[in-house]
Length: 306
Image 1 (cartoon, rainbow, N blue to C red):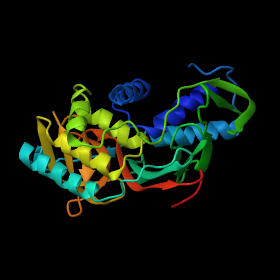
Image 2: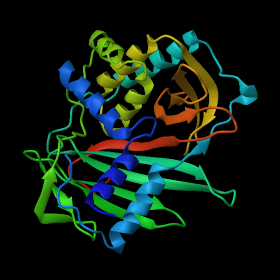
Image 3: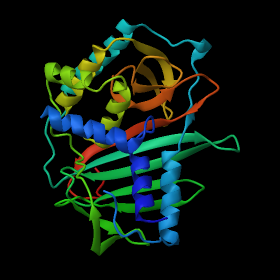
């Protein structure tokens, strides 16, 4: 595993895999910019870096079976829109403060996958992303009964350069590679419903996939999330699944757009309307991905817990 392989593994662990992750990420960031690199010097990695790669690959490949009761896709568009509007009301009452550029966005997620033995394997991931993309962050994963705990620094991008990984998973003090900054805070995202509606309409046919990528990789203030959920509520062909269980075992209501054979759904707590996470919903015979959000907060240093 070389520097480029590790970069790809980290990216796969950080974003959902509904489409090619790099392309989807570039499209979302490009559209955000409108609204408001190859790595050099590959190195052959040693065992510590290989172990980390296996753990990140496990996190990226996590799946969960979602069974639709009776094969039904659930409720109507009005029901789905109501769930999203309720979630917007809750989000609007939450913190509207933007993180400082030198702070970090901490996100803790859990994913679950059926193991060959018939049991369930879980992957716990903690990510510290630089709010402005310039500082070095951190990715920490725990894969029980596999690679154990692993962590790797997430290099910041300064003046178009990011430090390269060494074989032990640390960052080089001398070698760097070309990069594009990927801030952990979506500072350019609009916080009013009208502008957000225009932004959502600009995303094209795969709106939910791009929204999940945005929520997976960026911090949104309460007003931003409120505007986003209200904008999603105005989309056509929305559906609800009244009962799903997320990767953390919490019951929720899922909202998605389009066909249910491989639709990416947002999951909300039915009582509080807080966003619980997302997963691909499909037929009972298909194994699909699932991610539960456990915590998200703004902290001062990479590695700091809220």
